[in-house]
Length: 221
Image 1 (tube, rainbow, N blue to C red):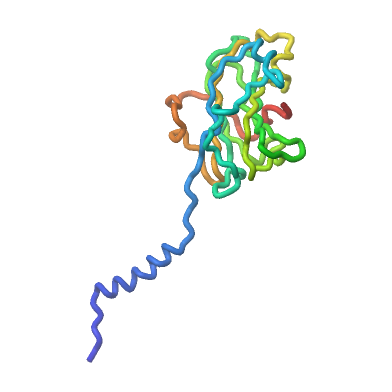
Image 2: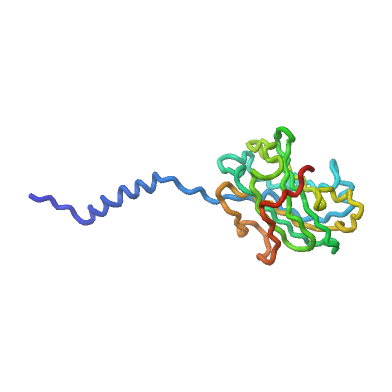
């Protein structure tokens, strides 16, 4: 007798190997990002002169830095080899047109060598929103941080275009008083920044974009 195989059995025999292959195939990593901090604050010449332990500093610590940030930035999600999206919204400043920037310094639980590393905002001269993406492998002293031990706090340092601390300028009226909102979003390796995942961002509008290849804003604190 000639054997007979039903069409349904034939289809099942075709799809079973495909289903197994799909289960065994490596899956693409899901996009991961988190807000490291999002702070809005005024900053006057008096604030710059009286900040401690260092002048011209605004310290992001305690409840101001995301308490749910990972301890290990390398695993299970790799933020160490990802990017950081930097957004500064300049809400108020003198109309001097003087270029200004903020160094954004990662202060780790455990450091090596210099002990901390800094990236920075784009230079800005007027009110508005300025943004850029920076590789976590391309900013000053990024390898001085033991990333498996995490970040303790962030030190934000107001400077002029030549990296001089703002309080040291002979013409502080060109910089102070000011009010800014600074947001840093950590994006995992292989992922792309998604502004829709950041709480309380205003609708996208005209913004000055800085290129990643620009010199970092701040060699040292």
